[in-house]
Image (tube, rainbow, N blue to C red):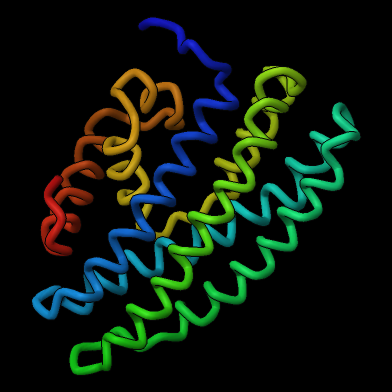
Length: 206
């Protein structure tokens, strides 16, 4: 396997951010399709809420302090990003409370999903120009490995197959192999099959 051209910290963060871009966009689109079953919408919605909450908590509680220790000049910018996290968390709460059951008004779900998508896209535009250079130049591979290990150990297991499926959509096979934790091949294949079935049910086959 060829080694990545960018540090693993940047690679993994870029993949996760692109998962968030794709997943939030897909939920908005799927909520606007009357033919999509409620169960599939709930599966994607619940995945998003759980994983975005966990991602932001991991950054606020663990990654930001680790960065400030080696790059104190980043503290002000990271604090501003945490404020955006709190704004996004409030939007995620609203999304989590939106009715998804068959017969429910999906306009409410779609509006809540649109708010989350727009906040995520704006937040990543703010975060990446600050975060990527620090990860590239000042966070050691050992420090990142410790952080990444904790993220994996505490990551929500809810709809984990969707995380694998989205990784496959945003990264090359080599990048995905580097970013995913060790998973037995038969289990990984089953997760990929389950994710693809959900994507098709949501009306997304690309």
